[in-house]
Amino acid sequence: MQIIDGKATSQIVKDEIAAEVTQMKAKGGKTPHLAAILVGNDGGSETYVAAKIKACEYVGFKSSLVRFKDDVSEEELLAKVQELNDDDDIDGFIVQLPLPKHISEQKVTDAVDYRKDVDGFHPQNVGKMSIGSPAFVSATPQGIMELIKRYKIETSGKHVVIIGRSNIVGRPMSILLSQKGYPGDATVTVCHSRTANLKEVCLQGDIIIAAIGSPEFVKANMVKQGAVVIDVGTTRIKSDTTKSGWKLKGDVAYDEVASKCSWITPVPGGVGPMTIASLLQNTLKAAKKEIY
Amino acid sequence: MQIIDGKATSQIVKDEIAAEVTQMKAKGGKTPHLAAILVGNDGGSETYVAAKIKACEYVGFKSSLVRFKDDVSEEELLAKVQELNDDDDIDGFIVQLPLPKHISEQKVTDAVDYRKDVDGFHPQNVGKMSIGSPAFVSATPQGIMELIKRYKIETSGKHVVIIGRSNIVGRPMSILLSQKGYPGDATVTVCHSRTANLKEVCLQGDIIIAAIGSPEFVKANMVKQGAVVIDVGTTRIKSDTTKSGWKLKGDVAYDEVASKCSWITPVPGGVGPMTIASLLQNTLKAAKKEIY
Image 1 (cartoon, chains in turn orange, yellow):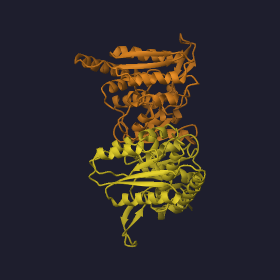
Image 2: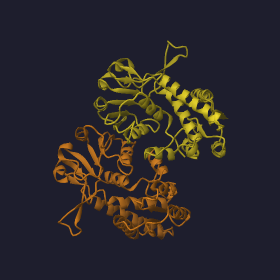
Image 3: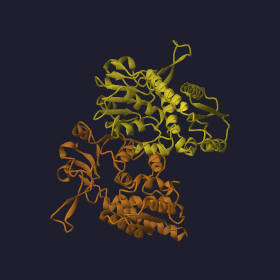
């Protein structure tokens, strides 16, 4: 069994981006600029946005943080989105989700200029990705694709079993891995809460992608000997052994599953760290106008 | 074994639309208006467009046909697309594919206002469909969904095996049938030319959707007893027994497969006739501004 080390890979990606940004600046090019809109003071969102800004600094991007109180009106937020759409210095921006209930996340997502939609949530990008055209792919699926590439995991003709059909992980992974080319050309099965014989389906997986948000859901008896297991779950559970009082649990019962795998991503340190690397990659692509 | 009769179902859908249009007009509402752009004189395209216009007349829609010679420039075609985008009387329009090689089909598709994109090919509609939001769904997948609904085929928890990953059939079907709700909630496997053990995978299918364009590809030994088989293939092959000199063959070896099925779509008379019904449904939705 070998570990797919997302933390180390994320670091490599960031260093590659930093090197490229240094070159771009040396040639007199524009500094890539990522903006983030943060509404309210949700602890998780604060942490994520802070990490994104820190990562921007690390690779040499300019970053801007726009804060709103959680009673901001939808109109005000949409006006700010429009302002960022129109700001030529900003290459890409994100609106950190979740938003307060009185604001439509879909409306806000749709309002972002898809050419600056480095989160890859705009329908235009989802659609382009779906038909196999260049697009901003959202952070988690792009991070998984990057891990598969960097670790040279074979996908052609393999049976990929995806547990979960969310718009941010399961759905895009099923699309990307069944498309032509590498990483792709896999036979892909999408499972979910309604799947009748989940254990039997999982046992067919040469590659299992667990993205349901149910801690330790995937047990050893669901995994074929030699499978590649990618764990996207990150559920916070209480813990007496950590300073914070909680720890992250994946969707895979790592202790019993790992020994059966050819490759496995740990939690933490697997898919998670790749998401910020993906956001930086997208921002760089936006700055270079690689997609649009 | 029972037949899923697409010809009869298509007729029912058209009659329902005609009745609704009569009511709309009686109330003083606008007549739904579909326009089609046809480039060149490809025999297949001529036939399709003529059938679409005839169907418009049948249900009481207004229709317009815009013709270009096949040496039309991309600029000229794009200018016409823009003109139709801006024409308030036109609720929806299509650009009949394929286009001559010197014109980018993607560029033309992208230029259509997604609110008038009744073919459902614009990335915005593909993306909205993919995330489960209201969207114009393209004709063939929508036609299949309609058949499944009208024949009350159970999909929840069923294993659907889709053979083919095209952007116009396989891909959208895999998305639609794995989404929440009915028809959906199925466990979906997407197979294609790179699938290693296609026969074994197909044998798991409670529902098989064959969309590869390879005549009689699906044999009896690939189909589980009692399966539902939906045949999307329509390959023209030479025939001595028809006046035209050719006949349509599906992707399923109907004669040997049919007896094993609970339900099966014939070719012709199965999925094919539903496509025009879908286009009319989309045009009606556009006229009623049901989606955008």
